[in-house]
Length: 287
Ligand code: FAD
Image 1 (tube, protein in one colour):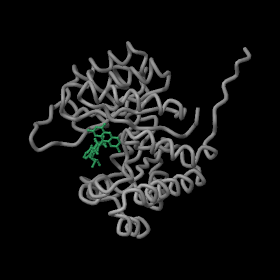
Image 2 (cartoon, rainbow, N blue to C red):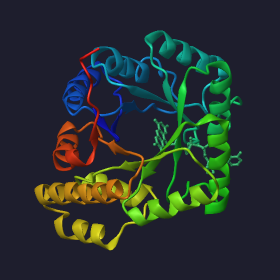
Image 3 (cartoon, rainbow, N blue to C red):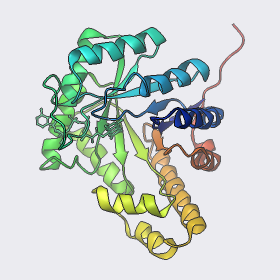
Image 4 (cartoon, rainbow, N blue to C red):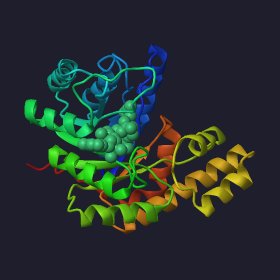
């Protein structure tokens, strides 16, 4: 197992899509990640059908540790209980406790306004679960300041987060400044860095449109030069992500969580180019 390297995948709503994801997961298994997390659509009632189904496959068929994402703003306590029960029955005891985005077309349920409330609820009703929380090196978009965001994050960690997984970022200095702010606030949970290799134009355009991610000069130069050359853009995007990871691991980051976008080839490339930086857990066969 490569200690310190993990992957994120997202489930599909169709049977064909899920079967394709299972094939992708078989390739990811060979890369021996520490864990694979499975995202969950917010505001839908099919948590059990999709996220849990994929998490079950990772845990039972591939024998890899898995984290089920659980955004709860549109879930009641009873619905959360049902998901936890199902995960518990499957032997899966890791959840990324999320609020989820508030969608204009839906009215949130009243039980969980913030992720910290979900976190303390799970700790109370199902203490066998290990909980992760989301964090934002460049501040959550709804927060008015770094200070407010860090205060809320501290509350979430105190509610019971065992570790934090970060939003993607392209400027490592933003991550280091965030780590410093966490240290100053005595937030002791390990922070795993979320890295998304940008490997095609659509992905880059989405990033430009929808996130507040700081785009460093080096990254913008890649986009400008290779925007219309898909192969070069992919190569440069992968090299950029490898460069980020080398720097982070060298600075002793707690872990790298790779947003794979269900592209096994991206994960294969990253592992092939960084494998020696991650500790490999040796399993002793001698009792
Ligand atoms: P919270 O921690 O509740 O924070 C949300 C906002 O509320 C922040 O601005 C925070 O500062 C503020 N806040 C917190 N507590 C308080 C308080 N007591 N009073 C006032 N303000 C407060 N979304 C999905 O739908 N599905 C996924 O699978 C998914 N996976 C993700 C994985 C990672 C690693 C990350 C980083 C994000 C993921 N998201 C996912 C997106 C996430 O749901 C959104 O960013 C959402 O807007 C915030 O969720 P949260 O759990 O961070 O919320």
